[in-house]
Image (cartoon, rainbow over all chains, first blue to last red; front, top):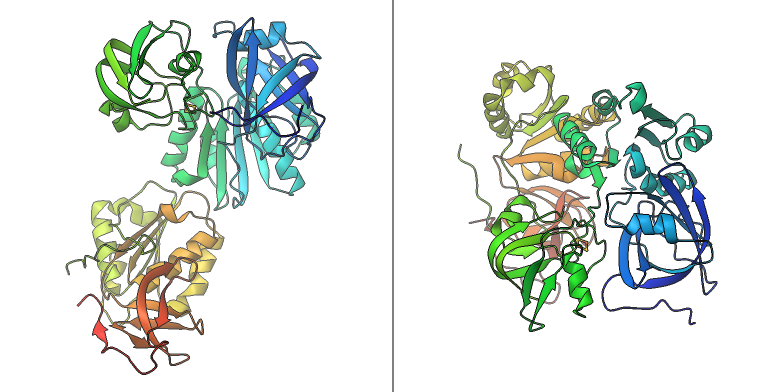
Length: 328
Length: 200
Ligand code: FES
């Protein structure tokens, strides 16, 4: 095997890895650690980056994005933490039930859609549940730079507080954990008040929490550019639909349990992507004509673009109707 | 006084807007000369922000101070020049917190320099509001000697530091808060076009 990364046509370059550890963290979350098959160092990355894990689930290819939680400067290993989603499409279940130490898998090169603003005077982190993972690598990066940070972490209970105890032990002065089952919640309004000028806020967690932080910060007069969030949407199943592809000159069917992007890939169409979660914008595709309704689920296009019916993000969005013609 | 419409130009050239009240914990307003009128308009849109407002005003010979005082801002400071007001501006920014709104109004030179102070204090330039009023004179940096000439109204002009004849460009430096002036007769010394008033 050559040391050079394998380049597929779309997506980031890929790295062959061996699963070096599978560590249950609690009832819902398991950590997976990887080493490189070719023994080379991993590329360094910046805190907040994610990798797309490519799974071979009994012949079916699954590709899910996960935040890298390891120390960005440690090139000997990459680690991710996966929350089991029993109602999901099966990627996290596959990781939890099938992946064992010694398995060979493929990861994409890291891509960062949630990076630290290194101009920030102070970094204020808001995490909810499994949304803690990108902050773990950010914290490692900031600790090395002597950065100023503070974490406010909301968890369901002490048992499900992924890494909460580790973090509290390691950084007692920076980490604040709030337990849902003890009716504790992040005192957001107070925290947004009185922060030094040039503080940046970062939020990763459930949709509602992200919206809450953005809205509260806006109300408190924080600059938009200093409030960062990351949310990956998993593609949702939906009614099958047909798509006509102009450039490829073919008509394909998108099944109930696959995304439009996956259907394109299944048919051998080279469709661009990076995050596969509606966040990066890479898969943006022009709609030539349509007769029906879009189900937009991405965070990339704005409301006007969604309403215009001229663009679709195939990684997460779907369509219901009589006909859809894409410029692909 | 009607607002001057700057002609479309290159991307580097700053674009100014119209001040609008924004939610915030404190409001810092810095203006010179006719910029006061933009602050008066701002107060008309929402007078309640004045209770948390700090106005720093450089009259440059105008008599807007009393009108601004009548808005009853929490703090009002009148500075003889921008340079004399810098200490005050820095002090306010140093002690400010997230949620401070910054409103700049008046000449390009004032807005550019005050924006620079606010940016260095940690506010992204995209969140700093500006509104141009009054003189269209420019603050120019000579790209040769790096000296700054204030209030340039004619193109070309003579660098007040090195004496070169400079062509007034739209190329702007946010960091220097100045437009770039480039020697106009370098190839053919002495061949200098007649100075023309900017935008005439
Ligand atoms: S692949 Fe990132 S938005 Fe679709």
